[in-house]
Length: 322
Image (cartoon, one colour):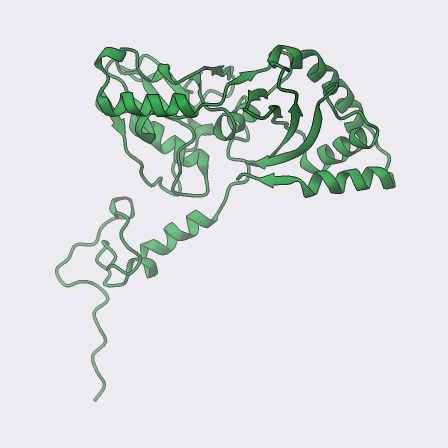
């Protein structure tokens, strides 16, 4: 006699809607009550979402290159954000921050101001959707409370749906993280300790004024210029190779184009600079390089043998951050 098939639903257990289902261990019973393990039920959709990487999550936002820089390169910075539908009652402003104390994804201060952290880990492959979800929860959080990490709905809004596409995106780079604490005297010991650790680890960074999304930074061994560029990758690498083969890729004596990062769908060329070369000394050489690059980008002829070798060298030294 054939055995009875196991029930597919837990007897007497109500079925939950997708938006109510919490994340549990892969081998645990799915909280929806189906009787299946989480990994074979609602965990399958969650795992699929994680693997679907959006290559350019900030595409369509004003200041896309600066979004990438603040996500990957800049230790301490803030940006005033403008919401498409205006600020809700009780929220005087919304600020993007590179990081927040205790690695909070977001924070609603006592005065209602919302701070959204950009450099936190996220739960899916769409950074824009994850940040939009955190922002939405921060706007309705109780004043004076941090916002915990969560899982965004697969069809939830993205930053492009929430932010005003016509508003300026103007990063303010800070020397430290004092912007965390408007009133340092009332900070908790945990937040004060987090601030001290963050300040000790912060690399001095300055945004150049004369070109877009170029950031000078100082390290103990040498200084660097890291420049996030919006040009299509293949075309940009060809142009950099042309300049490199012609001896025109440096920013002056003692400087050298050493390679590039790839981050969130954009290429970030990196130059080594002498220790004594500060951000101000980079302004004119960077502006001159931008003109040379524009000419190289417009060149329609195929790469020469020397230029192809230069391109191969640049490609071999490229590192993907995300």
